[in-house]
Length: 415
Image (cartoon, rainbow, N blue to C red):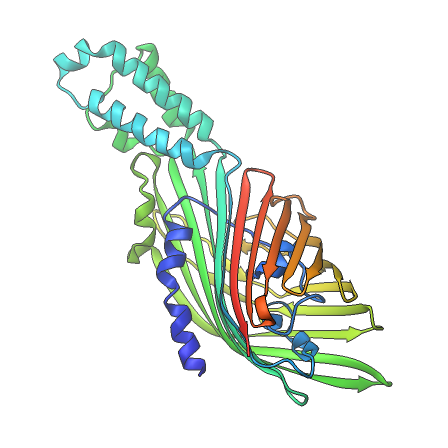
């Protein structure tokens, strides 16, 4: 069975790659998974997740299944989040047009250069303006997919879980010498030479990572001093694919990002763990630790550029208040998330609520913030439909600072 789900998640690779790597994006999303219910509730889940998706947020919550609950299948959960506060994607498209215009004018014979001098000066000035506007720009995005099969029971509830989670990041490195050269042509103090754009040094730097986890989560409830405490673990095989694309801004082609010479991969083992306890009928506490074993994986060195993808333990605490109609949750990271070594750290806190308006309709909302102020803060909204209690369709959307938008869709079944 585990082999079957491993094969199923592999089929998402062609979907994830275009989402992450066919556009110049970078991402620091709150966790290592997308779950439509949790993401609609501000990214909470350590104390609020259902048993069906517990392995994604806190495997200890597998014990939360009720006596009449049966096998739950999430098939699949998919999501993406994009941020482009600098309008970098549009700027690079415009830059490509300007480079083509300048190249067509500058790569001419001396008589044509003299004839088109005014146009060449204008094209050089336009290109210099766009380079100045691109200096320090960055964009980011994330995408993910997951399949979970949870089997509840009284002794040792377990689940097969497999997921793919990817991030991509693009930044610019604009050389002042390029701007000075183009300004000289604009002012008429320099004469363009055929092919001179090939000597310009400004670069576009793209970094991407896709992490595949294949694990089996198990949980058990213990009695400690007469108080129930659930413990869960998810041992998993972890595959990491890294992409390092560095190219001249004047020849930057986002479709090249996937090429094999920019890609490398590494296989390893990791472990997720969690705790949960019900304080009383209305309060639940949870603690989750994802990726307990640190891993540093270097990208290929391309054009002198190299980076390191850092997998670090992510410890998150959560608290939930709930009754028959309402669940309110609060999660906060105790450790930071960094991803690539050259990126800034983020540390998240989220709050959210679910109102069960009817047995078949759930309404959700929340808010997630980066406590280090390096990633976008987002407001979240979503709903769930569960006709007959057997089919579950969950949708979530998010929007926030720096032109950040995201969406998650999830289909599940219970038997």
